[in-house]
Length: 284
Image 1 (cartoon, rainbow, N blue to C red):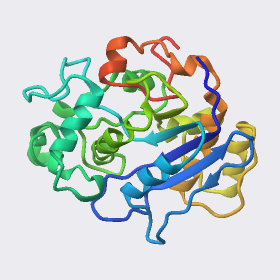
Image 2 (cartoon, rainbow, N blue to C red):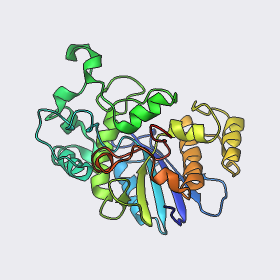
Image 3 (cartoon, rainbow, N blue to C red):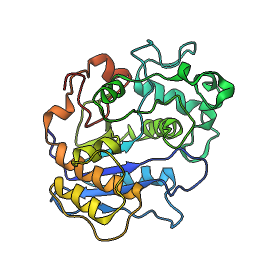
């Protein structure tokens, strides 16, 4: 299927402690094909996570918004999100489960869940035993790894600059909120206001690169030109170049039906694990 949309949003997310986060970046591309633009945070110290939700909920028109975090843990390979813990078996049910265990965490943090009921499932250092015992991937992550795009991180690894665990479980709380006003693909069919999971490294590859961070004006301009648009004026951090390219890539790709129906996205995968928009299936 293809959607007719007005606005394309990309958001680099953070699950870090604290009230404001310089690592959160938001970019917006309009359907008219112009240069994507950064959306400035309402406070110079950075975005609060709740402010991102408020801004998105207030954005008019037909919108697809991509968030750079994992929308669910692996389920298919082990038949459960957290073996040994009684938890729901659908993505939306699991988001509510995370929310219920994070009531004390301000601004959509997920530390109460990760350090509480689910603690034994996370690798937080050598004291937890061999890291290999915690490495589990979703179907879409395994597909990405097999395609030579790099190595997708698992949501159960909490150590290192590349870890996505804290951002992902924080983000699941956000999805629990946003689902009141947005379809969350592929757990829901896409509609005029839809949220999707993105991986900015994969989006950089769709812009003709190798998936590496863009750290110069020329590199940003080249990537955006490959997506059919000019670059905005200014100097940008790599968080900001990530979302500028991802917003333009969403605009470029959203009208192509095959991205909404990748091979490997079975009904069971869509219900439990979800999928990263822009990643081809195992035989794609």
